[in-house]
Length: 199
Image (cartoon, rainbow, N blue to C red; front, side):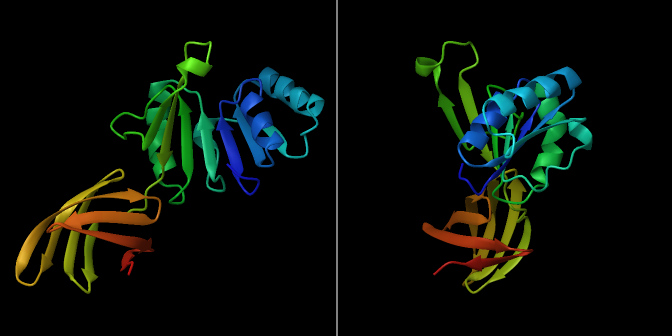
């Protein structure tokens, strides 16, 4: 996280995540359904001197616009994560999503960290996802025709080149795509609905 980030904490509780982000220079917004917790977190931000960068709203997560966030943080139960997943996957590619302990079903985390050696609570696993660009479909490349199927950040498909059809495996990381075909590794960038191969 950097000072240029806009962090949204979903289910912000007493505001500690939002306040910590604001102390590190980011703008941060906590979304909390319980109005008493919104009042408490607002007072906590004032006490910590970050009320200019840390705000809290009482709102329903399912009706809240996340589209301006560059970082989403959450400590929500798995069923709520799953209900939010389609909305999160529509966010701008490259948006970072961090969950304390709870997963998003078949959408496997890009990174997982076990912090139990530094954590005296029972919830000590951090999961990070990077929202992937949507790149499924057929792409014309200088090397030939690339057909991609996409399951979250994982790619499969074929590359038809020089009269051969090669199996493809790859991954999407925000707008960045990497895949292998015929023993060669390719790197590309998603640009709208097209792919641009890197030199």
